[in-house]
Length: 196
Image 1 (cartoon, rainbow, N blue to C red):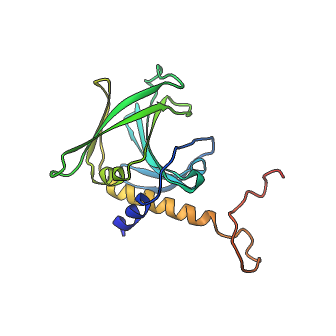
Image 2: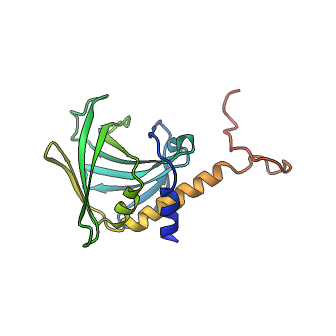
Image 3: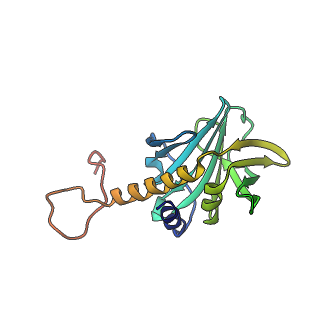
């Protein structure tokens, strides 16, 4: 079941993530991770972990325009020098299984629109899903300087919940909003308070 959910999500196409300002809702609490669904991600979900009082990390999917965009976001109050519009080349090394060792990626990150200083790293390689699920640790660096070293216990279960959450949220978005309406094509759920 876990492999199927992650594989199904990996088969989706990828684009560019977008963030706005609605509050996320807790989907499931795990030992290290909290999985959230976020209205800003159009049915996408993410897993979130904190490391002490200084750092936070999110890994998830934005579903705008019906396509999945993978992203990793790192947050820290320490990063006051981040500049809006500037790009940062971040090296990411995931410690996977003993056979594969460290899987290394380079991401082009930009400052996110959150209130807390944060960098957003979109990814389009579906292999990242399996790498995150198998990883036990991750190392982020910028120009040879460490950004964050983090353990990832339970990342496979958390990644499964992110996939399940995203699949469920996307399915709910296309349920009919009028239970008394007859057959025919179903419409996406609409906010009844949206001005005409």
